[in-house]
Image 1 (cartoon, rainbow, N blue to C red):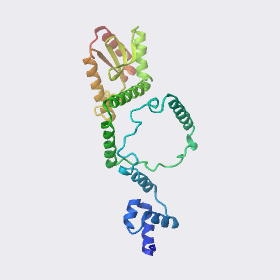
Image 2 (cartoon, one colour):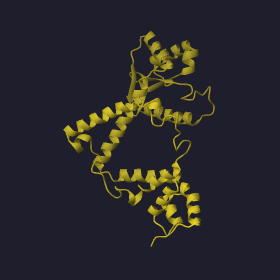
Image 3 (cartoon, rainbow, N blue to C red):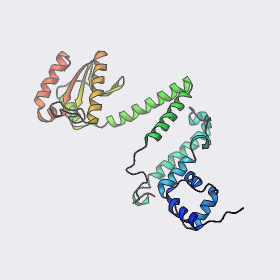
Image 4 (cartoon, rainbow, N blue to C red):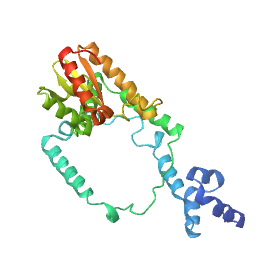
Length: 280
């Protein structure tokens, strides 16, 4: 039997539709189906705000509502070649490459979001969502076999090293000054080389020269208190120095301030370090 909409029901729908999810609407009108509520809202020309639209999409794909719930993808841990075969994987990679190049053209007013404000601008991820993401990541890693786990871990490490090396190829001004000093002193060196987990600036046999930016490495004569970035870099520098020392390397630190303001001091310091190999 069809239930007629009363004036009170209509007022309730008008006041609540834009700010209520599908689940909340069903609770609000427990004697009606969701489809009938949406049809009435459409006739009244009511619209949902963007936050509610996003919540509805999210709620329709979580837990056992997700088509992959409790299942394991047959693509998991496989390369394109392993899953699709060599011939088909080549075609797929070419299509993705073309699509990636085409997407570069969507800049400025060609971009669909040009002049618009993203719905999540200025918002932070809630702890509830962070916990769900964390649980999902842990479940993913726990479901991997030992071979898949090692393969995935090695791939992540390789990608991280490539990304780090890409940015380390760019010389800073202090590094250029240091390199000119080494050339001037006719010292043979290896530049930008990985030793274990760390990328080192200049290597001469078992001696390493590290060029320290004043801000990024928190020059003690300039920064008594550290911000979050400096504190993070400071702790990493300590681990790096300890690792290099434990593996038989001597390390010289040259600060940006000294390289720019007292080049003679740096030249003398460099000569003594190469001659004596003391840790400075």
